[in-house]
Image (cartoon, rainbow, N blue to C red; front, side, top):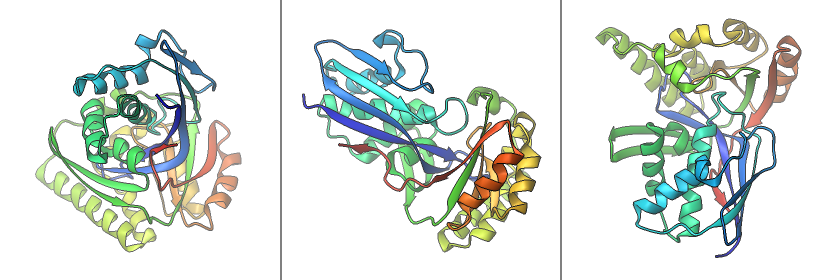
Length: 296
């Protein structure tokens, strides 16, 4: 076995109306340093990671083991040193990043030669939906459709010319809790309107009409109206960000983080203006990651 390193970006999902479909990678990272060893060992070096228990209980190990077993391979032991600046349970795809890391760990250790579509399929089966997985794997903006359990389609866009500003509160929100508030059924009119908004929003992003895209991001009918009450300072953040030049502000994934989209020359300025107004949040500009998973 050769020693190697890998990095996986964080991601934001939905972009408002593209519920469980759109994912965008951002420049916060999960890093793994993998070294040859005669036994498994996981070492955490940053505070944002959970307590490191036995290797059998480690989430990344469990994903790697599951991937190896899928291909009838034995997973050789390694020492894995992990660092991360992706906050947990905040709507920035920490789970998806760990899943992608586990799949790639098995891919490298077992020499599986998995394709990107193989990895996306495995990750989607584990996560249940492909949006964060696709963004973490491929970088940039990825629009996905899960047609059946084993049939995925996606379009990868790497040239979205925007800055993003995230507002990370000091509270967690589990995805399961955020999903419970969403209705199980929508009327025909509700579904038609919400899906139409999503379609035009994605088309506007492709055309580079970020003003129109931002307007439509804030008109979601699938999840934001129901999750808003779970998000600290939801309306305040949207209004203030708009006043200071954001094209649009939405819930990042299931929340509680919110994310604004701004032109390249205004992202840093927006973060500096918003920070003092939101003392209970970590406010920072993060650029779009355009590469995705890297092994080196």
